[in-house]
Length: 153
Image (tube, rainbow, N blue to C red; front, side, top):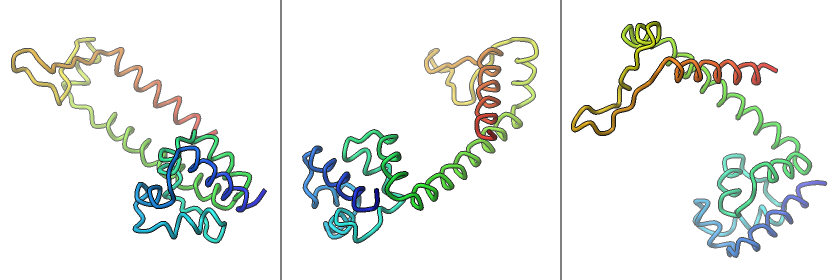
């Protein structure tokens, strides 16, 4: 399989989604259908930043599209994986920072198993109040650990 097979796959998916080249180009943020035409004729590579938008626009399962890319354009697939790992690393770092930035009140509430209000909660009229319990935080921590382990493996 090569880029031509990916081009045929994308053209077929666009047609199944009942999209013209011009309409697909508009949805994907192009001014004309020239880029879509070039991709579908295997004259231009699929831009990495358009993988998810194309999957959405063409009603494709992202896993199926990625598997096709993996077989037809391994270089693009490897670039995609590298970017996804970087994004995941960044998200894990942010989540870790959120855990470390728990306020003293939140830590004390966890230690004494007292529910506490979420920072975005409102006390006006009893609406939009969200309580967090020790269980909620422990679930987040366990989920974080599992994601970290999956990422490392």
